[in-house]
Image (cartoon, rainbow, N blue to C red; front, top):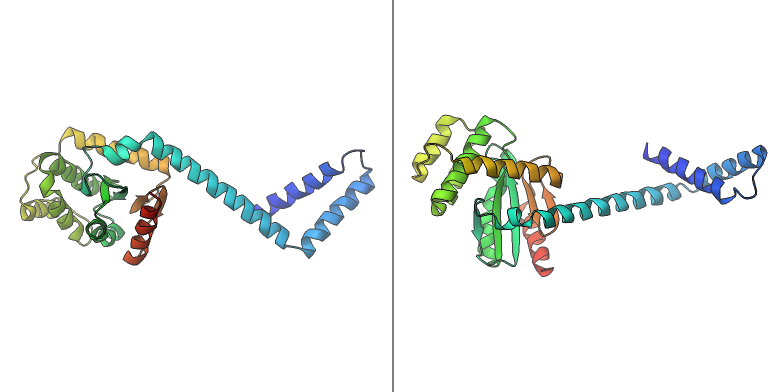
Length: 240
């Protein structure tokens, strides 16, 4: 499809270039033959055009993401209802979109405490995207409620929720509360609003799954080895 479109555009441009004076049907046919022959002999023209279009598309997406980040910077980086760890006055704030039922989130989550321990001027903000099941919503709202009521207990509760293999159910969430020593009878109403805002923002940012981590103005989609994550954070810090 991409190459067909490029071929059409190149053909049109060539015809326009020789449109004055008007060509006869025979001349137009010959121009088309010449264009086709050139492209067949030099397919790298199409490859270069395709690469240019991909670059322009990526640049447009990046600009759109920067715009969304700027418009939502308060909720992204300074929302008091979103859990955070690390520096109080960071040079770089990472925003991780996560789900307590996501297996890759469970692998990625231990990186976060490790990274703020290594870089004392980095902070991490947690945004929950309960995509996977009802228990994703329940665990996210419970965690947000714990953060609002007893922020010092959040990470212990978070770590226990992330340690569970497979999907959560009411019993596993209750067990995590007991082990963490937290009491959440009912998740508060603010937790619901925070989750809604996170879901809406994720849609604007084009996030389609978890984990997704905003590092500066770059979005890391999915799980990567710690060394790669560390390198991205280090590079982002250098740009601050």
